[in-house]
Amino acid sequence: MTVKIWFKKYGIYGIAVLFILLISVLLSSKIIAKTNTPEYCASCHVMQEEYLSLIKGGLHNSLKCVDCHLPNDSKVNFYFWKTVEGGKELIIFYSGRVSDPIKASTHAKKIIQQNCIRCHEGMVSRITISDRKCWDCHRRISHKHAGLRETI
Image (cartoon, rainbow, N blue to C red; front, side):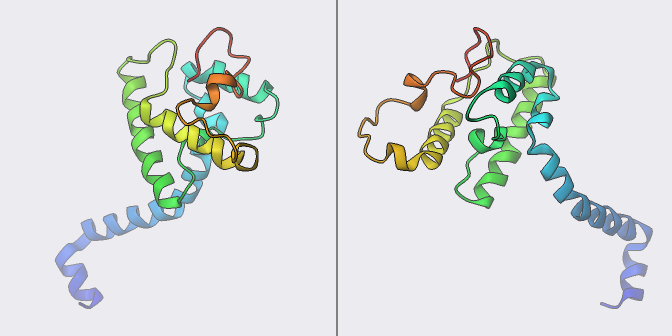
């Protein structure tokens, strides 16, 4: 299909759609980078306490929220769950259904556990206890200054 025929068929609407797609592609990397930062997560007022506890925390204060709270086994899995969880969090926040204290879902706990093991593989390779989670012993390791709130 030539440009002239395409323009006749789709007209100004087609050009508008192409323009929007082009802008989306150009901005997507910036949007993704911005939404991967702890500061973005903290922009939701219910996460302020967790953010402050992370940046004031010890060993994990150089990590981003997505390092622990999203799967990091593949880019496809990461972006899929970033979209799913991000959409879910927006709905929960704007519908006013944020739980207090904030608790991780079963799926989120599985991801967090996998990420603990991924980062600390050398230290945990000989541990054979499979029915316990890392935070059973290492409570509030990343959000330790978040007061009395549960973080997992």
